[in-house]
Amino acid sequence: MTITSQESVIDAKLISSTDLKVDQVVDLDNFETFYFIRDNTIYKQNKDGTSINYSNYQLGEITTANTFNPLKINLFYQDFNMVIILDNRLAEIFKIDFNTIQPYKNVSHVSTGFDNTLWVFNVDFQKLELYDYKANKTRFSAVPVQSLVLDLESDYNFCWLLTEKFLYQYNYFGSMISKIENTGFTEISKSNGHLILKKEDSLYFKHKKKEDLTPIKLPKLLINQFLLTNETLYIYDLEKLHKYQLKIN
Image (cartoon, rainbow, N blue to C red; front, side, top):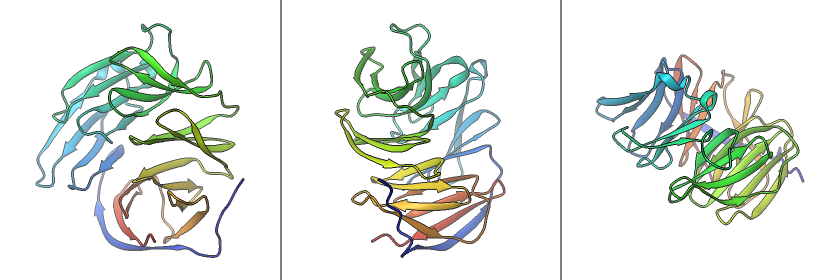
């Protein structure tokens, strides 16, 4: 079922626009700690401007970085089918080589789970798995999906899998709790159970307790990246990082 609310919109009030030149904006948390990638290096920059960084050029390009749990940051290197887990000082604490574990996993997407787990999408079986990397055990495998996976997001309680045909939501027990038809969305971002979805040059908001998708009223701008932190929406257009306040009821 597709439910898109066109009757109402969510207003976005511009708070600031800051000059920025990075390859990827990863996160901006409640403490104004800024995570970003530049020249295949991940940086953690504090509010006072001090920063630390991590790089591992032997593993190729960083495909995705997930800082939802700042004590267990995961970096996914798809070219080498590997994940590096970092602590809050960006020091390596665990290395997961999906090429050498049994059974072998060919992974295309990775996101943070609870405890010592990762949500991973196994391309060979076309299914979402909850993988315990400390125990080297798959705690849960979902029913295979029949369309291309576009994005994967998660928190400690839920996981959202966006495919070309549907947006799936799972709980941490592995049960699918919702399935919404995808009408052209290509990326998602989450905060506190709420979602922001991108369709072409527009963003839509999905309340965690509702299925309807509400357009966000924004000026025309290039949306290269976007992320939601509580009720703050950040949009990066390759030159500036725009900060908007959303009115979420």
